Image (tube, rainbow, N blue to C red; front, side, top):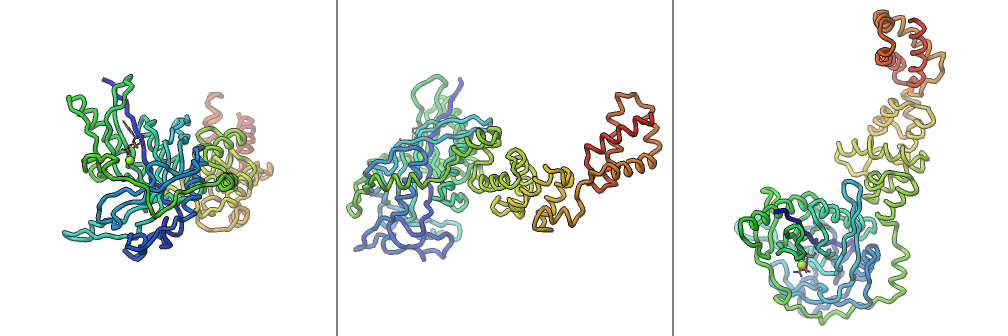
Length: 484
Ligand code: ADP
Ligand code: MG
């Protein structure tokens, strides 16, 4: 039997507001436990929440970026449950009237093809605190700093059909929220986490299978691995005549498996009701229009522009627009050197290679976009050849000069194009290599092309890499053939 995978993601994005969604307490990461939760975050008697407008603006910007409906009215509800990291006894969320309605996100797959994934809605809610199990023996610690941190929960339709598509979707969300600057997108610090809903069905069957929900997956890689495991588990279960039960599971990255946590609650278990402490949020048209006008260029538009206007391949355009920092760096390089293709090659080749080796993000590149742009310009105007360019790049990377011109000058890497000088070096190499010259002369004419490489290498070495390779090739051929 052939099976089809069906996936829907609920992505929680921590919004980059400075204070909490309903209080003035700080949202800064990494503070001493329990120093950043105030009476409102704890739901102490007698306090009232006040909605943080920045969180509203960010949610609406996201909605606009995914071409979603923005309803005029949204409402906060209480989701009631008990947990040690939730002293209020309820989470303030939006159940029935979310701030962002239906929209869509375009994802790009490895082969450069794109697919539209429908977003059911996105709603605002507060985060809970955090239970700490590791540092305590036989006890659990509770850190409430995160309580009340604003989250945007983005709920997709079950449109994803593979682990790769799910990861691509998560990357698309990551790039939209970081382009908008509404989240730092730092997955390691928990700024983006997702619940992965997975089911399988026989190929050709219309009805969805029963799903399992894998909670709190916090990296692109884990999303893929959790889905791969879960799909296999469900198929095996079904093929053995069993049934998938709707439940909440946990992904264990150390053992690469998902484990059952609890059977799934129904919405009515939570006794949702409108929060009596908060007014409905009413957005007037002018406010939404203003936010629309201030949206930056978004990843999908940028990718399209890189392809259409700059003539980049779909693949290059995708890679270079994936993050805002990458796109800004690339465009700066392109502006300085004046050639999009060369800029794309260098940024994805030499630069990305070096960054990956050192594990550096592009915004911490030791080589500035200006310096790289100038370096490329010097290759294009023939000041240096390709080989010297790599040396210049390495020197800039090591901080041995502030600009490409400075390094070229200091290291004497200027390309030698003076044919007199090149000829002199060639004559010397020919004089020093009688055996190779004899071999060349005795070889069949169609084999000589290959043999010329030795002489080119010697001349380049003699010029310390600065001779113009095309000239060296042409002049060598002339001189050697004259000897035959
Ligand atoms: P709940 O209210 O129980 O969280 P929803 O209907 O809101 O359930 O769906 C939650 C998520 O699960 C959505 O992202 C949706 O796309 C996804 N989903 C729903 N049904 C399935 C299914 N059969 N297989 C995979 N994903 C599903
Ligand atoms: Mg849910």
